[in-house]
Length: 335
Image (cartoon, rainbow, N blue to C red; front, side):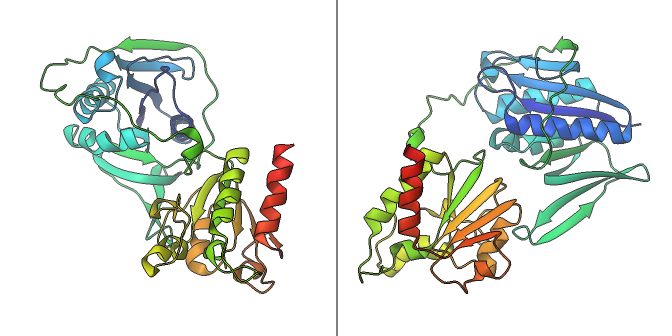
């Protein structure tokens, strides 16, 4: 019988992030399917257990408050060895991903990342993950134990069944060799300057049409930038782009100043998991639509009624000028 461990770091307030709660939901779902025990392992500056239940192993203290490979790996190793679990499930956050493989190596475990599905068939655990920009889906199983699994966000329902907890606080030895890396501070853009928001409800994707000549024969890049940023600020949406838009600068053409390759969505970019998606001035061709594989509701704005979005790739297509539409949308959002 398997023993399942959910392993995660906590946030500054001592609680789990939305991504971590989804991974905990996956672990709870797996425990129901396989039977056995589910224990929780948490580490961080503070560890609050209001969101979890059952047996909890924790490592906390100032040394574990900030993301640092040496201390995170030491805490994770101690928790895993104390729990003696055969399956370890963790959220695929940036902090957890940096230390997860190292923890697995210290425990002599096999590890798989970017897991998007868990299934039990004939008593065996089968995981699902994607390859080649989410174009190839693989179903895998392993006989070796322990087996470490990193869960992608936006796949499983968050765990919300809190109850009684039994906490065992572990003392992780911290010496000078583990704390040589010191975090001096964090440099981050202002909230209104942050355009990539994985937890946003809506993804807004801008195409190259925003920087092309408009009906008056001239481009209006600054006006386009104001409309797009205004919508992002008012709606809280995340921003994506097509490869053609971020590559225009190499062609000597004026581009949107806030757009980078990190905003790319599609075959050459990311595959987000927002609930809703709105594309403007995009053609909806295959390299771009690949990035919308997990978007539940798809809408697009394009002057061409025969564009790629009209061929079954969008739930709703608005045949209109994106400048006029987004100006009206921003006015409605301001009311």
